[in-house]
Length: 398
Ligand SMILES: NC(=[NH2+])NCCC[C@H](N)C(=O)O
Image (tube, rainbow, N blue to C red; front, side, top):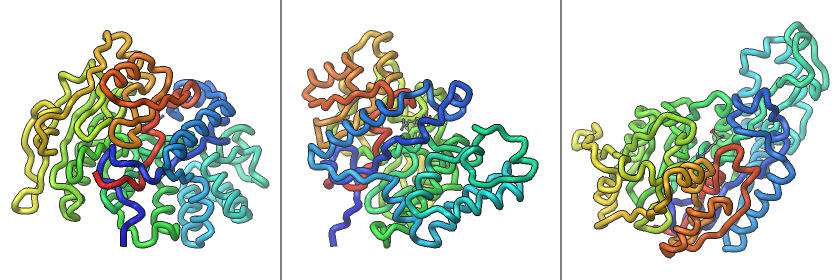
């Protein structure tokens, strides 16, 4: 039987993609909490939703099936064990204390699956809790969170990534994002659509985020290590992929440990089977280490060498082309910050990009890449572009 869930490249024709339409969780952002919730501004929620709908429509217009996290989650929590798991993840928060925990548990128990899914994503303030009591509750402000919201669920790429016919549910590094994977983990294990799916990675392992994982070619995976993914996470993923025959080579790519380059996909994404668009300010310095399944079962490591060289060798092609955006360093830096290098390929030489990155998009087109432009002025305040906002679950074989 042909699997309905299979991804072995970044550019094979996109069949199905997992998105999250932003909702009430974005309305929780204030100037006091936006830094800890990993947003650089306070998005206009309605406009962000319109922008996201334009993104989804662009994908559908190209024959892509769009599935939403909130729908899958509502269907998942209709399964009692799934409901227990995701609820427990909320109640495990040590800040609650026993009394408030009991009130929150009662609150959640009364919700139907759709309302529970919404609450798990949007969070819950003290004012919204139906009944409360105890000292923790007494000392909270009305707007304090009893359940933290998950505004970064929007970036579905980070909490799960398909490699072949298996899914890696990742292990997120930032506190504000940890609970996201309790939701994706539950979806992939309990939703009937994914029955029988094997998991190649689980939350709780060494830190690994999907934005750092690039499927360069069938059997070749690049993993950025920096602010989010740790070298030990890359090593764990490599071991797992080798054991299961999902990859023969994992390229480990160190990136600067800073917010502007939090994931490998903020500086480099694929736009053709043999081409990447890359942030010019790092293009000449990006290095990689090559990890392969050693003869004794212990991964063999070699390198470093220029990423582009290591990648071409592992992909068994002559050259991995860098689409040279040829921009001056200041324009390049501005457009990198606004996710100009964070394109989502729908097929080879056809990608979705934010319209605001005028120069990068023009250069892509000059190099033969068709660009579908979407607005992103509000969505971009979370520092993520089309690739971050999408988790492909089916692509045609690359
Ligand atoms: N794959 C990506 N580049 N994701 C971007 C995630 C942005 C999000 N605000 C974070 O800081 O985690």
